[in-house]
Each structure stands twice: as structure tokens, then as C-alpha cells.
Length: 96
Image 1 (cartoon, rainbow, N blue to C red):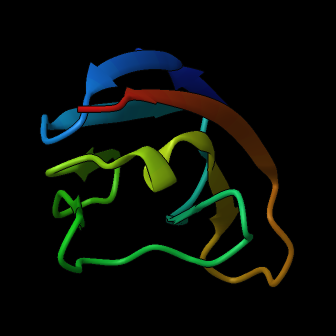
Image 2: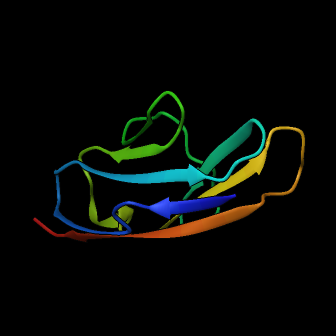
Image 3: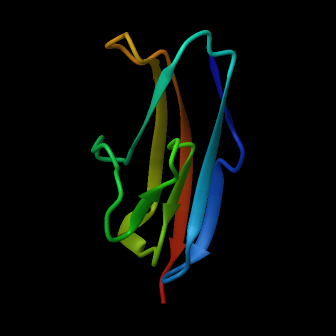
């Protein structure tokens, strides 16, 4: 199983919206996708973060300078506890 990063590096101005997209290929069974930030906190829908239905797209709304940094997408098979693979995305946010 592999993850293809569609847009691994984004640069935006504060207050803008950006999205990161991951495409999973070669999966032989049902899989689970998890996104995390630079602090290793798993991301879910919240004030600034949203995920599409199958969690392949992470959208950051009203991006602020503290949102800058690395984001990770990890994939594992649904029946396994360990993640199979992961990829890294980077966000730069320019101040106001």
C-alpha cells in the first residue's frame, strides 16, 4: 500500500484556506486514514480543520501562523493496529 501526495507543500497568507490531498494505492483490504499535526495530535473536524468523508483531504480554514509546520497522513489496514505507511505535508503561513 502506498500514499501519493497530491500537494505536499502549500504556502498561504493568514486567514486563507488550504487543502492537502493523499491518494492511497495498492490497498488489498479496507484501510483507515489518520491525519496528525506537528505535535502528533490526531486531527478531526474542528474550528480550523476538516476532513472529507473518506479522510483523503485535510482542509485548514482561516489558517494562522501557529498552523504552519508539518502534517502527517498515515494509513493502516482496518484489522491492524500499526500504521502501514505515512507521508508528510508542509504548510507555510505568512503573517497578516
